[in-house]
Image 1 (cartoon, one colour):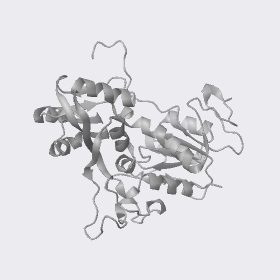
Image 2 (image 1 turned 90 degrees about the horizontal axis):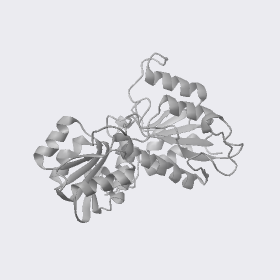
Image 3 (image 1 turned 60 degrees about the horizontal axis):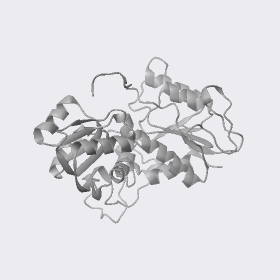
Length: 326
């Protein structure tokens, strides 16, 4: 039997929780560590549609990038959107785990996948992971108490050795300078963005590139300090766009969902490999797996174990194909 706690241990090896930002809420957020895990769903965000999918598929654990709950809940009722979703998951016995910014910053995490996808070389962290001055880089660093709401180190937060590849964001160089318009196309193609945008002149040459998935506008200053010509991220505010333009930094916006969703699909594949479980295709089909329930949401057969990326997780920002805006 594979327990939820054992899955948590695999997840913390993939994304050590000590790398999470101090404001984040990471680790096992809902559930019983000793409960059995046979069906796992990965997603970017837990929405009503994802909850419905998880219940229909009899999922034991959702690995969601964005935490739920993110902020402390004073009441567990159906009166608010977040507490309603938590209530539904608890009633269905579905656990929730989130690595969020730890997965962003981990070696092999989302920002590393971006750097590889863009073909960057000499890749470094944009902001290296902080290590206590008294702890050498070759020695495991302690987990900040802020990573647990109780002040205790969660079991999946067992420290490991610090890697020079860990930290917030990434930066590196392209083989040769490319036009900003070409880098925008490359970034959009890599993550499947429906309408990538940029703050730049199309003919601006870019070679040293920074990447920061999600809402990475706060990395504009760090990118400039690293001597970057451009920053690829999901989204940024209007005033951050002005800041980038004023400092001569080309800013590439592919959309928050698109900048991270591909990595949750890869995480499902990674967990299947680590656990030795069955890999399902995008339609939910696999050996020993049926697909007889409504709307193409399948239920697993007895004894079949799998990790699958959610089919209900969608970008909430729709694109009108008939819009005259570029």
